[in-house]
Image 1 (spheres, rainbow, N blue to C red):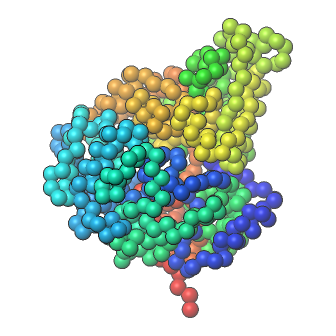
Image 2: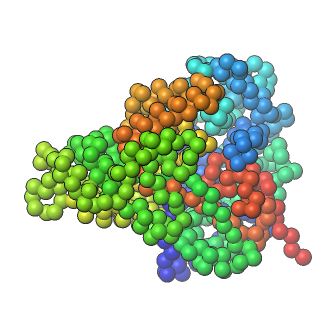
Image 3: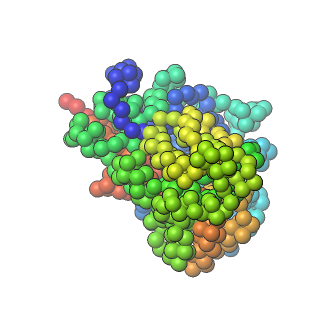
Length: 553
């Protein structure tokens, strides 16, 4: 979800050099978010407004469940997480001797307080954890028992996504929802904000970190790089160590600049697709968006081959599965369901036109574009973050196809933060977006269609919910039996494929470039032990701890 190389890079290169040349040897420079504007906000509950470096680096998770090693658990703040045999409770034992960055001990009181404050201020509960929990109780100085409302085999993973905050700091905050937390007290490896400017900020080591002996990086530096043109210029100049960027023709435009040190690895990643807001404030557009035949016609107008080969330079994998599962979950997919809808998942503008005509959409004013069956105007913007030019190109290909079919779609490129907010709030008409695939299809479906998640994240932006899906998601969580879990997923797959609330187009690779010029210890295609991306929650703290500075004589 990034950008196309441009020839006009000089300004970006000068910007890159202005912060790159003054760097100490043990300062790791990375990009972790694409933004042209940011504020000093390190509130771990502030989804979409806090700096991305808040998660993991300031507030560390209880553990990391590594899907690359068959679910191996790397304990962090916790030393043990135990799910009861009846799946009705989880007991967390916190690490002995762990301290907050101000030297105060991390205790069970902090964990209980965190859950209590999320319950008191529901806007903080961005993971909807209290929809799962009945109670959170301190059962020892370093032990907490979380009792569930219903049995859930997924409870440990969900609980792990709640970041614990220090009670002694947050108890006096009158409004934790708007609290910017500019000088955070945290548990992670990098908690000290040594410098913060509109162009860059430095986040340095926690003086009381429990694994200080393993941490060999002194500071993280986050330059403001809003587009991949800027990122590539910085990377090619050797000024950035850890990068998450779409780079066209990467072997020539990046690796060839320093073949000994510049590397990349693109594991398969998130699903990318188009969505129409079924709760659009525009009544005329909403009529079409709620019409399955309209969505199917839009799908037929999507030239996925061009999106992959032209916009994506061949890096993505096409996704023509109406259920969204695609090639990511071959062992979970009901092949009969996938095959049932293949006729609306391949590029065919003539078929799209015929489907629209059959559904009553017609050009009533002679402008070559159709109106709704009742004659009301149908016209909308497709939003895509400014500067993410592989996505911008993907959207333009989609728009070209839709307009060829008679659908009046236009391009709009808000800033990424605005795009995300519009998706979360539901204040848009159409958009391109992506969905994390997770370890099993449950996570992708739960993020997208769990009605309890509405408005919590951008993943529910299509506003399609079904009580049957909620029930099947619930069934999945209430069993640890793989066969029963598969049956639940097949049921959801069928509903999603029948309704096409998301129009999949491809699966993105995970973008990951890195330089061994100043640091070694990177995950790689030769040593694929974790998700290596700088934007992947939780894994990245393990990557940070594995890095070692290159010594020079």
